[in-house]
Amino acid sequence: MVRIHRDIDVVSMAKIVVKGEGMPKPIGPYSPAIKAGDFVFCAGQVGRDPATGEMGMTIEEQTRQALVNLQTILEAAGASLEDAVKTTVFMADMNEFSRMNEEYTKSFPRDPPARSTVGVALPSGIRVEIELVAYVGAK
Image (cartoon, rainbow, N blue to C red; front, top):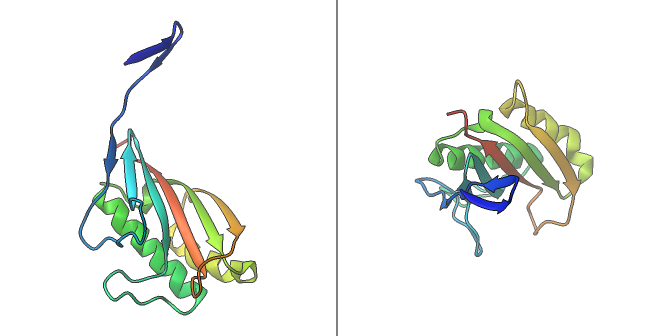
């Protein structure tokens, strides 16, 4: 513990890179996820199957695969989608929101995490990217 002010103590926490079998490989200089304290911070995942490299064609397929990829990463960190507290969904076409939302809801049937959804320019062929923060302190 480090005291930064007479009334504030800060607990130092380790930053752990999450690694595991079947996880999507980063395509740049970033980690798929970082565990810091009681939280797991997952990098944005797209609808690419890590085993085949194939990208889903529809917003539903890409949303489903992005969430499968996040589940795989969370399992490597000792967590699951049920532990998600916040997601951010990046969409190339906000006109597909209701279709994305219908698929997304299947992964969070009860007590869904807080969520922001924004329209952005994504690389060619990518319709959706989802990043996630999970709380694992209660485990």
